[in-house]
Length: 401
Ligand SMILES: Cc1cc2nc3c(=O)[nH]c(=O)nc-3n(C[C@H](O)[C@H](O)[C@H](O)COP(=O)(O)OP(=O)(O)OC[C@H]3O[C@@H](n4cnc5c(N)ncnc54)[C@H](O)[C@@H]3O)c2cc1C
Image 1 (cartoon, helix red, strand yellow):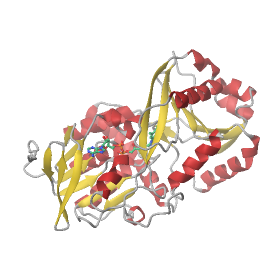
Image 2 (cartoon, rainbow, N blue to C red; image 1 turned 180 degrees about the vertical axis):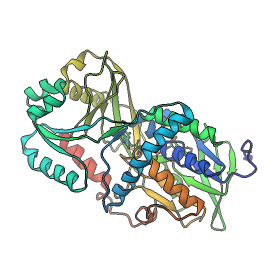
Image 3 (cartoon, rainbow, N blue to C red; image 1 turned 90 degrees about the horizontal axis):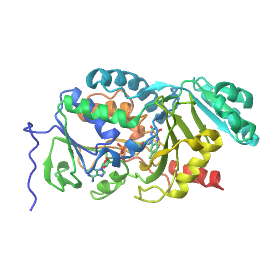
Image 4 (cartoon, rainbow, N blue to C red; image 1 turned 45 degrees about the vertical axis):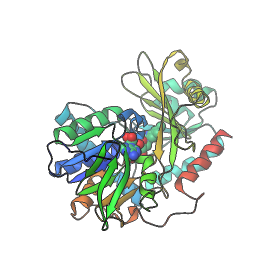
């Protein structure tokens, strides 16, 4: 009934990557850079991925014993290198820049929490400065009205916070992949992974079977379902995030403004991203008028003049939730040529470069640069209700109360 797809120009594909979000494309680029022939399958356009929907905030990434921090720290260094390489290879500037981030609060009762967050950043080697209300206005005069209204009473500055523009970065990655010979097939849905004699033999897709030497499951929030069909428990619970995009005649904000889970991300060309929500609504990637209205209310509370700026677009994406705050990265026992790279939750853009280098090392069978054991896809799972995602959902409920 199904035919075998012939991948153009390849006799045998070394690796088939399932999912062309930030994780799949980054792994494909890295593998192709080491001479691997790679095909990437995705059922839809880039705009349907969580990666396209992301804000692109990169908080400082100091080194620590925490495996997630180690992956982020490494990725942060790699991002600077990749941004330069991508610009040279493709001519596309992905917008990576250090703009700094303000982390602010509306409540004097949060003072102890703010102090302890600043200490924690400093102890881990990041630059962090406590701010009172007047220093907030010194740094960002356009927040003066919010400060006068008592909506911002203090906080801290992380001068090394960075941002990237996800759609541009993805476009650059896709272009770089193609230049390196990667075949990207969109409109192809992977329906199942075929295992025989303890090896992943092929994937059954909407277009037919595809065989390869190795397979990498990087389908974001959808990885869990494909894994479950072959008896693997890889939790990637979808957690919706919504964003509104405002266009201003010229940019008046320099730094990212974070207050609780909401933020403003200023782009140099006048765009302002207003995010975001953390919602457990299954695979529903639509926006809701209530959430967008709440985000816009936050934006105009912070900068009242934004009320005159048109909302250009709004969108939602499904973050792949993780079980314990770190993604699942590595081989799985069911087929020893089958690998998983999923569950980056709120940090997939940031952690994508380290993930790509680590996964490419594991797939190529060379010694990994980062200890992969904490990311073992088959590690013990916390009980339902006690995961990193649950902690965020509880925080959202408190913020909205
Ligand atoms: C609103 C929002 C803001 C965010 N902000 C940030 C941020 O500031 N910084 C940060 O680092 N991260 C951020 N994130 C998180 C980040 O977007 C994710 O962690 C990351 O995009 C996950 O990438 P991925 O490649 O695993 O998944 P995705 O980008 O979702 O890609 C998975 C791909 O797999 C494809 N696919 C799924 N199933 C199949 C199948 N059966 N067959 C074929 N293809 C399939 C999908 O079509 C999709 O393209 C944000 C996310 C959201 C939603």
